[in-house]
Length: 257
Ligand SMILES: [Zn+2]
Image 1 (cartoon, protein in one colour):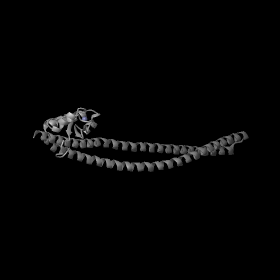
Image 2 (cartoon, protein in one colour; image 1 turned 30 degrees about the vertical axis):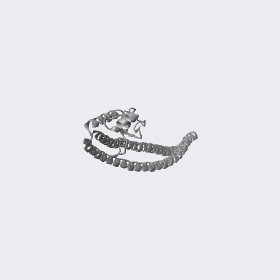
Image 3 (cartoon, helix red, strand yellow; image 1 turned 90 degrees about the vertical axis):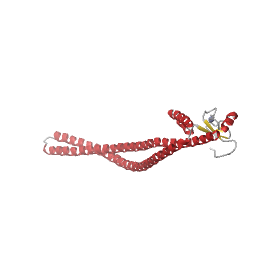
Image 4 (cartoon, helix red, strand yellow; image 1 turned 45 degrees about the vertical axis):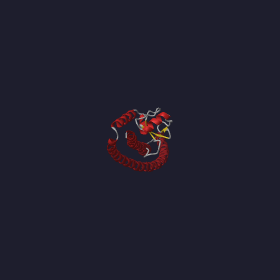
């Protein structure tokens, strides 16, 4: 019976479409997961930059401390020289001049010591912050590594699943009439060629007609069209979304969809 055959073909096409929808979901995930992994890596890289900046700040504070300490040491040598000279000078004026030089060194030392104290406080603060940041970054890294590993596993599982689904699809395909099959493939190809068409492709080319409504566009099927479609004699398309209609039979006989 010709009409039974078309109805069966529509059922098979609908099954193919469900398979393809699943495949498209897998395909989408296969594209999304590497991006997710990349984002996780970028977050880690940003943390490392923060950590390096904090480390550099601490190194700078410690370097300045060393410079100031060296200044104090040099002043000590200079002070000793002046004091030696003081023992040998003969005039009061020369002695007082040396005294002033020594006082100047004392003043410099005092300023350097004040700076060192401030820098020590700053370094302590920075060390504490650095420690906290390191703990945080290490926790983030561990979390990211676990998440990345999970995503990679998911990716491998999806790849296996995709291969399996494609194999099953290939075995399934010959059951469908070549004309119907080609029409379906042309439509799918056209949708997938456009950026916005992926969602349409996922909804599919075959629209179920249930309770007199097209399941794709949700618009009531015109009574004449519905009557035509329920005969299953020739392909009937939704007048609004142009999809191939696979309608519920008038009497519940056999499986639907
Ligand atoms: Zn429609």
